[in-house]
Amino acid sequence: MATSRRVSRVAELIKREVSQMLLHDIKDDRVGAGMVSVTDVDVSGDLQHAKIFVSIYGTEAARAETMAGLKSATGYVRSELGARIRLRRTPEVVFIEDRSIERGSRVLSLLNQLNHERPKDETKQDELDSE
View (spheres, rainbow, N blue to C red):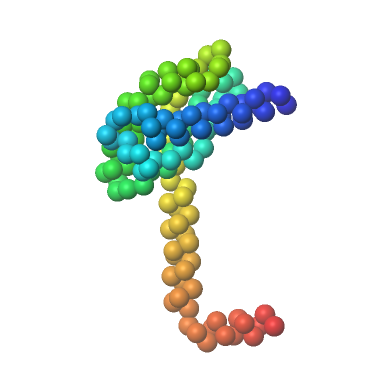
């Protein structure tokens, strides 16, 4: 049990530190501050690997460019993590684009669209049925 608690604590630390790096430290122009946010970090049980999930705001081309910038910054991110977090070995890091927020907002907009397209008499009938 202590192992899983430690893994989640390390994941939380990595998430916080990488978020700070994205805002202040990564100087690559492809990685626009405020356009990228860390949504989750998945650390392996042996603390050797960390998948960093990021949500990127922008066009498809901007996303691809941002991912390329993040990929080129992995060495820097890993060495900074090594300096900021006290671990025996700093995990290998990999950035993965997280599109779950985008999918969720698309589903919500489709639901809103369906709701507006419903005939008014159907809506009134539903209200009567629920009483």
